[in-house]
Amino acid sequence: MRKGVIVSLILLVFTVIVATAYAFPPGCLATNRFCNADLETLGKFQKDTLPLRGELITKRIEIRKEIAKSKPDRDHIASLRKDIIDIQTKIQKKADEAGLPVRKCGKIERVSGQGKGMMGKDHHCSVRL
Image (cartoon, rainbow, N blue to C red; front, top):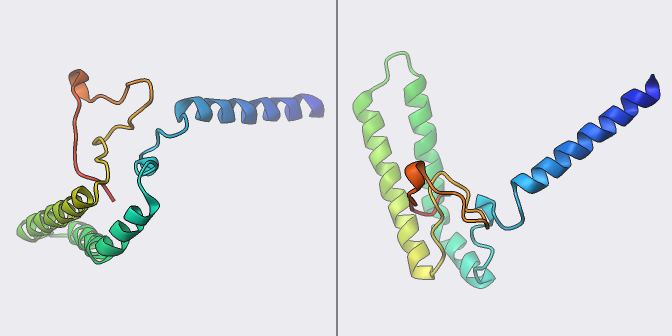
């Protein structure tokens, strides 16, 4: 009985590991979007955009707090969302200036060519941080 349970657990763990490896082949995760970038360029980009990324986080937290209120101010939320878009645009411009790649929106770009949006169309967006 014990051996059966142990063998079953080992097979379950092995199956999960193998499934994960097939689901995310090397180099396809969104966190690896800068894997071909020059480390110096990437480091400079990160230093240059640190204040902007800090602002972005602050604005996102402000939106969450506003939405969590019993009577959220819709105009304030809209203003915060506009601010977030403006900050993301500034970050994207800095990424473009540095020559860093743009990642695909909402989908993981896979080696096999998958990662297309609805109806098979490619959707591009700014670098998301």
